[in-house]
Amino acid sequence: MSKGFAIQFSAVTFFSEDGWHQQSYCLAHSDVLPKDAPPNAIMAVVVGSREIFETTREARKLADLAGRPVAFDFSGLTVVVGPGDDPDAVARSWWQQLHGCTPEQSAER
Image 1 (cartoon, rainbow, N blue to C red):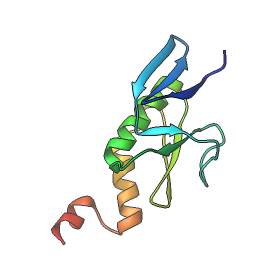
Image 2 (cartoon, rainbow, N blue to C red):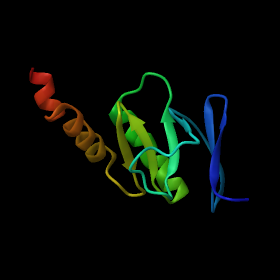
Image 3 (cartoon, rainbow, N blue to C red):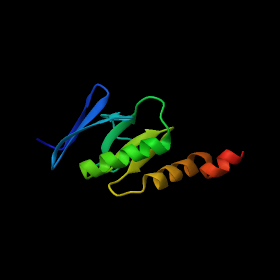
Image 4 (tube, rainbow, N blue to C red):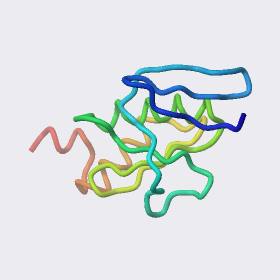
């Protein structure tokens, strides 16, 4: 069986070298690769009203399990989280791109 994942109700089932894994999710499989995403990325879409830090942390878990990056669109920007990436640093970078300042600076406004 090839590596990949499929949606099962409120969980995602992942296959990696050590077998199948199931987790609840805020990311679901997408058939459309977000713009500027690496071609080997797992394509995902954010499900429900989620927060960028929570979503990048989940993407990191998925990337580690799958051994390849996870790409998704979040508020019009493509986010890519690879295995071993710091998910909070990825989220902060997204925040800076979208808002032009850090989360802390946004909170001070």
